[in-house]
Image 1 (tube, rainbow, N blue to C red):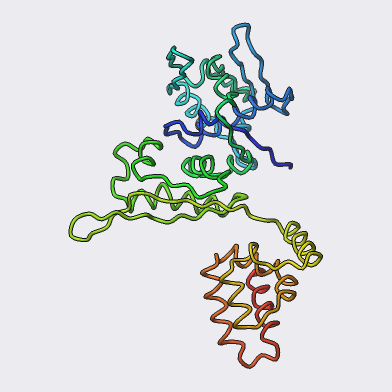
Image 2: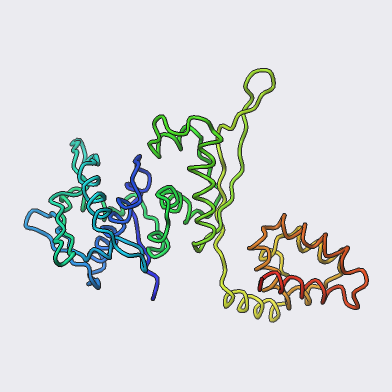
Length: 326
């Protein structure tokens, strides 16, 4: 099935909220309808109509608010609709402040499992508001997450082209954590690490972060902020295309493969630029799996293992292939 991209207004991406995973899935479907409206498209299984007053009435099968392949649960869907209908969003239009429920008039016809609800005109407009920029991410990926925190971090980080820093205070406030996870170690485990690991496993991007410390009395340190770096994963086809260009232009693999890994392969195993290009796919995929630090550790172990090998270079590449096929 082709993957769909969803465009989300920065108004919503930057908003402070704490949604359950089921609420987020419903919101993703609203986004999908809003994008279809902007492009003048019809959607398979999703129906949206606008009233004379600009409200949007949405209708969809129950299965649409669950990930593909997951058995729909009526009780979970009802809970999601009910919770979302009870939550509000604030809209500032010039000098006029307004507050609305995210959705209204939620209904599930249990005999046909058809869900319907209304999105008020200002909220519908907010979903289509591109005046403050937009974020694009893949719907199928976002819908597959088991953690609402994964969905939130994916929205915030998936399109970053440069590292971005968030304070711990900002994370607590934006995620509306309240009294939850007061200790930083719990915040990191429950809100950050689990989510980032799920994103890295399932999505089209790879996210890492570093902790920035601040002194607190007697030399003790505490984490005050985190800097996140996002890189896009490349497919095997993309790597093979890059290899082709490298051969034609006599490029090196630096930029594709971490320079520390390149240096180690060249100065320890004496790989030439041409040999690195020829094996770039396997080296890159191993780097994606292990990260560059783990790959260096792997290469260091292979250095000791391949002392008696007829061809240390072939031994290294074969070992990386075996790692990828394991």
